[in-house]
Image 1 (tube, rainbow, N blue to C red):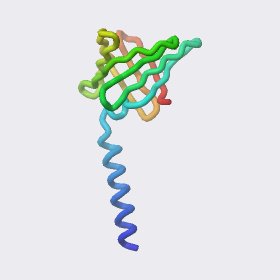
Image 2: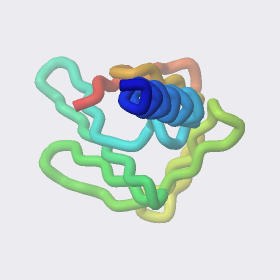
Image 3: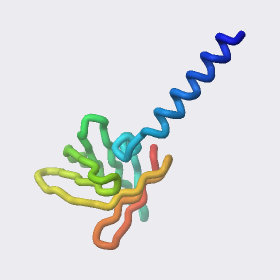
Length: 106
């Protein structure tokens, strides 16, 4: 019985440590959607630093990096853009030039 309790406690500890240590890059990984007035924008970030964005049925491939925990550098078709990024469990906000786009995790 003590062995089972110790195993469960160790598993919970490992889960908490891995969740607490997830950095901004890890929280960004996944598929995100934004949109209003019938226009849908999908952004997808992979663990390997690759990204793609789909709008109006066209997908662009690119790369991304996170600097300092709150800056996203995103390169698509040879053009690099920088955004302030804020990621929670289910939302991501990208801000550039005073304009913010809010994405929902899909």
